[in-house]
Amino acid sequence: MPVPRKKLPAAFYETPNGNQPVRRWLKKLGSDDCKIVGGDIADVEYGWPLGKPLCDSLGDGLWEVRSNISEGRIARVIFCIVIGRMVLLHGFVKKTRKTPAKDRNLALKRKREIE
Image (tube, rainbow, N blue to C red; front, top):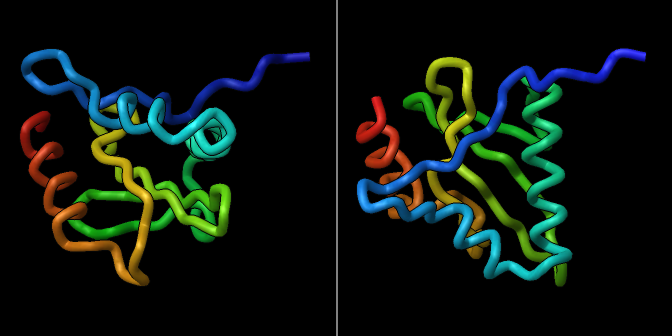
């Protein structure tokens, strides 16, 4: 039986000094929530292209992985696609109905850095 291939392998955005903000954020989530978000990222890697409810476009080449984590909270990982890879730009726990402009703008800034 053939092993499934990732259609869109994930990579962490890395700052010029080597920090990986999304990886750091995931580690702070706690193991159960980290597994949920990681599983959702893997679903995008293997199932791309996907739509709602798991994945949605934010415009300007930004996409989000939408995860339901513990205690009724909602986590988002914003990513872009660069040379066939999903680059994880920013992760946060959503507290409002709409994605906050500061989170979207930070992801957009990081996207522009790597283009």
